[in-house]
Structures are given as structure tokens and as C-alpha cells.
Image (cartoon, rainbow, N blue to C red; front, side, top):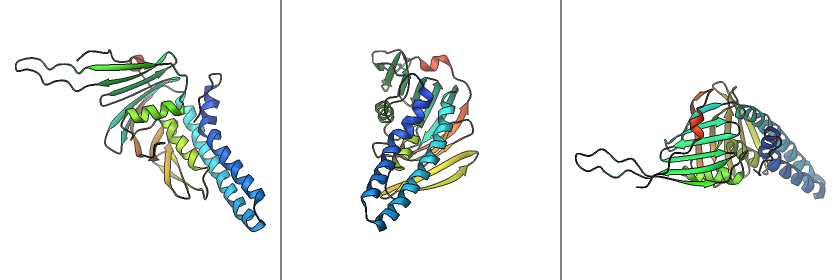
Amino acid sequence: MSELPRNNPKKALLAAIVAGTVTLGFAGMMARSCQAPPQQQSEQAKQAAAAGAAIELVDSLAARLVLGLESDATLQYATASGAVVVVSQSNPRRAYRGGSVTFISTPDGTYLCRAQPAPSPSKGRKAAQPAVSCAEGPGADAMSAGQAKAISEAFGGDFLPPEAALGRLAAIAKGDGVRTGVSKRGDAQCVSVTATGIRTETACVNPAGQLAYFEGTTDAGTPATLTLQYATPSVSGAAFKPPVSTKP
């Protein structure tokens, strides 16, 4: 995904999820088709048609997710490792909290905070509070590829933001031998995409426009599974305030 312009974040996010990756793949297949012998052209035309179908499916699912990102919500996800990450969203603000890590992104600034393990208390004394350190970066109105990677790495590599999950499907849709499938997971609509040499990746979006399930890999190639455990249609303003940095 590329950096998203500020003038129309909804359309820009959809374009970044879908067009920025798969359009190049589709155009590449058409160019190869024009240069190939007739028999190969027929096969490449089939590949181009399959890519077009994949683009349409991912585009439809991404459009639902973009609408969901416009609404305030608090969502709790479980990862394959059993870790829990709470996502707070109030467009364009995002916050991710899990374990000892907090990642906050707002137009005014981004914050990556980590809590260090608290030292064992001396006998007869109250337990010490864990030391918290925060690094501050420039603000952002929307998700970029670099920020998605930073968020994934901050949580140990087995979590990725919902926007990045749909971006993974879009990236696969530009591959050779692309194949797709649709299914349901509860009330969520699911799309699966695979290509030659690439394992199948699946994303599901519920009627509220929230990522309900993802099974695939991060951009770093780490296997990832996200399962939405619960969601509420509200968010606290405090969710976007970083914890106070403290010394050990």
C-alpha cells in the first residue's frame, strides 16, 4: 500500500488496497499476452480473466471494510499465538494495544510505547509499576505500508492491521495462476485468493464493515491468523492518548 492522500481518505484507502497493487499485475499479464504466440495468448487471456475476477472480489470486500473504518469501534482480536490485540478506531485515529505494547496513530502524532517488566517487590513493599517508554513520530491521516509494517513488528510479527490484511489479498491477486473462492463465516463474507507458488489467504468482513477473520501471512512472510472476538460501536477518547512515560 502507498501513502494515502488527505483530500479523500475513503477513496484513497480503497485505491491503495486494490488498484495500487493489482492493476499493475493485470496490465502486466495483458502486455505478455500481446507478445505471445496464439496458443499462449489463449492461456494468458484466461489468466487475465481470472485476475479480473479476483480484483472484483477483493474490491468488493475492501469497499465494505473502508465503510467500516469510518465508524467508531473497539475491536478485540486474537492472534495465532494466543496474543490479544485491542483495536480502537475513530477515523482517522487508530490505536492498537496488546500485552506490553501500545501503538497509536493520529494526525497529530504516532506513538509506540512499551512497558518493561516490573521488578520483583521487596518483602513488605507494594509491587512497583512497570516502566513505560514511548517513541513519538509524525502524525498520519491514514495507513501507509511502512506504518502497517511497524505495527506488525511491534506486536511480534503475528498481527497486522485490518487494512493490511485486505492489502495482502490484493497483492496475491496480481500473481500468475490466480484462483479465488467465496464463503461465509457466520454473518461475515469471505474471499480467498491464491496464486502459483503462494498459499491461499482468506479475509472475512462482517456486515458492520469490520475484519472478522484473516488467515494468511504478513508482508514479512510470517504466518498470521486474526479472529475477531468482540466489537462494540463506541470508543473512548482516552484510547488515543499514549501512556505516561516513566523511568524504571
